[in-house]
Image 1: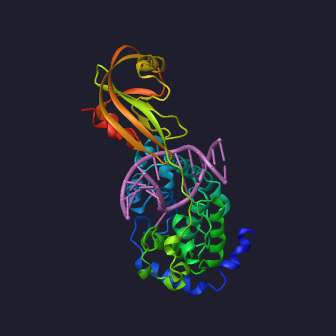
Image 2: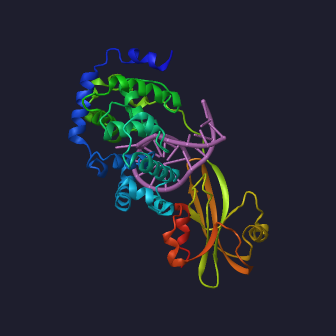
Length: 361
DNA sequence: AAATCGGGGGT
DNA sequence: ACCCCAGATTT
């Protein structure tokens, strides 16, 4: 059966009016005070939704405040230097979000005079704006009854409606979008969508949900059957792969330190780091010759000063941090440079390499 | 449909 | 350890 054909069966005997009223009334009363809730400025809503992707509210708050201070308008962000934007994003993760956001804002400034679009078609053309963010902007900034399905919403609705589909599958999100089209309040779609997410964040948590405090307890099928802990159904992901690296602290005779910029695509795109030797490909004794062929500098390895283990979503870096001394040669790699120690902090570094800063002394 | 893309907080 | 988080894009 197609997803949309299941909607009337799932919503059979469900009191959507009571559900809407209880959810919205609760949200109006109990919602957290958050910086992006000060007003409905579409730019602020947009920035907050990008930052909140796969990221907790408490983590985002200081980044959001700083970002809006540095780039208060679409025009300001459009004109900004990309490295400055990445610096403001430093530590937040998923750095392609920052680049996509700036590219999209530039498009909005050029094509729409800085006015963020209020329709699905134009929003979907913007880099980094997917189904969730599009629905969030339309409902929260423009009061349109569009679904905004994130992890909270799938967890909350899977319990309330007793939906046992695997929420790890892409097709399941579409089912929830169809369901919300029939569930959403046309009087206050913004509070309805935000209420679902707020409920998931505060009450209907992944583990040990606070069902006794839940404003929609009387409408929750999982609670009625005592099965809230069994939902949502989600298949587990496989574990990360280990990648060994050597990170090198190399200082020249002027006291400057060698750093390199990562490629503009892929992992940690366009961020800076201390030179990294992939130890899965290079034998330890071959490091100097490998380094000379890559950087044009002859080095001699010194002491190991740290061992850093950094966990990503899908891989693990095991970094041995070693000092090295320059013998001869001159730097001939375009994405690398020597930087004075006091200027290091003006470059965006991933957290894994921020841990190396302290060995500069 | 599955893999890629960060980092931190909760249990 | 493992899971999850106001997901989107690429393969």
